[in-house]
Image (cartoon, rainbow, N blue to C red; front, side):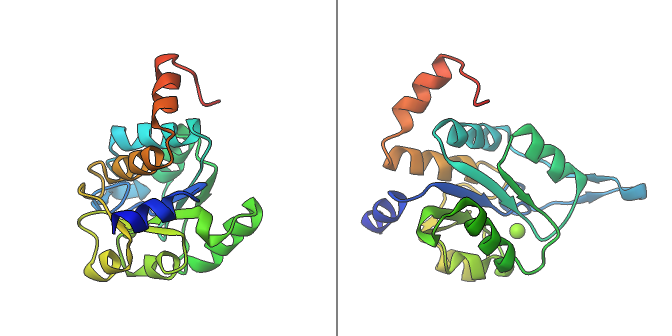
Length: 180
Ligand SMILES: [Mg+2]
């Protein structure tokens, strides 16, 4: 399994993430008047910044739609944000086309059944520890961390290390160089 991950990780150029259950633990707090709260893990956010520092494209692809996700995406300067798509595959294919990438260049992390069509195509399908059974079975890399508890960071760090980019990223962090 490790050799398979290493081989598939080598060609990854873009990370795509589902939100609920991946970037969050899955909880959705709803208030009146359209108020919605989600909890994001700060270390996942740093992971996304590190991925961008290392030259990866990063995108968010979620079935729900909320302003908090838009805000988080802006904070993290992600390249792509697609919200409110029940069928994720057409949006995924558009992303591939606009960035001129093949399936083999994409690592996607999802936790539920709607993520399967993408997980079954990408070069490196990944899932958090608490993803649904079918999703974990479809994933080549299942993190030890659960969604919203550092799974995103663990995945990004793993790929950066496998591509030999970790030391370079650490040096950039020490130099406090902004990704922008
Ligand atoms: Mg999800």
